[in-house]
Image (cartoon, rainbow, N blue to C red):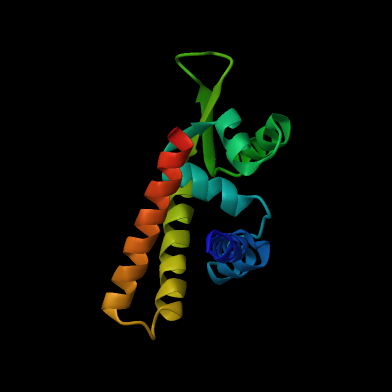
Length: 146
């Protein structure tokens, strides 16, 4: 049973990590495609602010390559970075107003896509999916903390 759950989760993760899906979404929003834009904008948008090191860890990339992407998106006006007040060696990153606007557009476009995907489901089925996902997230987070 656990392998079946893992396989289903793997399929979902692959769907959400597929750059083709990101590019379609960005194209629909008339935003210039960039292979690293979605993972970076979405993570920073969800967290509010983060550091290069934390972002690199989440993306599974090295610090220097993430730092270069941050520099690129900062020059494009999507991100703001500044030295941490707690540790001058650490750079904190947040979304600029333009980055926040793009983040919100992505959220809205994803909601439209999910509404389309879930159009044939009843409200009680959607509630069951939500509750199951909440249970899964709680279980995974609890196991990680132990």
